[in-house]
Amino acid sequence: MLELLTSTIRTVPDFPKPGIQFKDITPVLADARLLRFAVDELAREWKDKGITKVIGIESRGFILGAMLADELDAGFIPVRKQGKLPFTTIRETYDLEYGSDTIEMHIDAVGPKDRVLIHDDVIATGGTAAATHRLVEFAEGPLAGFSFLIELGFLNGRSKLPADARVHTLLNY
Ligand code: AMP
Image (cartoon, rainbow, N blue to C red; front, side, top):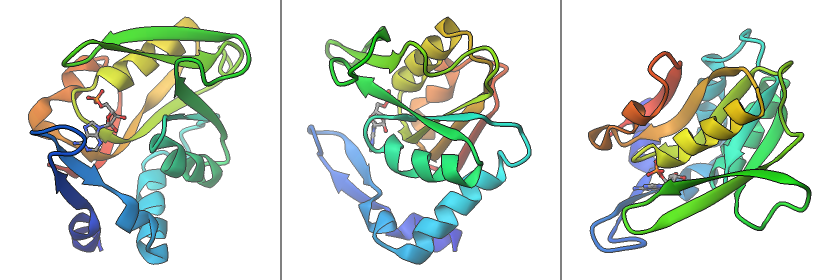
């Protein structure tokens, strides 16, 4: 099943920019059996870890993140690009290859009584996940760890995450 999952993820060359090998998970989302398998495998790592909130990072992190939250009996928190969340937010800016990006989370989304799991579909350079972690720290939400469907290991994004953090990825490239 893991091999089927790997072969169903579509690599699209030069999207959205020349040189990027984009990992397209939509064929997995479209397949009921593979979608169930992916969520079950992601959730297995975090069952009985007392997770109270799963953070999904815009926008593909919303899909499996929300399913993961359901599976773990946790709440779901969206972290979004600047200007999308309606209530008071906290924000973090981080560097991209060219320029920078800003993400936001609602100020009351997580707190000291939570155990927070951060999810995205892909960890590439790790900048987005690291910035999300800084939001969680600012909100004083205790971190349980990070969950990714796909890790682009050659980019070493893990090195941007806290050294003692639990990081689970299903597929490594
Ligand atoms: P990062 O470089 O880890 O900050 O990744 C930035 C965002 O872009 C994350 O939400 C990733 O899911 C997404 N991303 C980066 N590289 C890829 C890729 N090759 N294929 C699919 N998504 C990607």
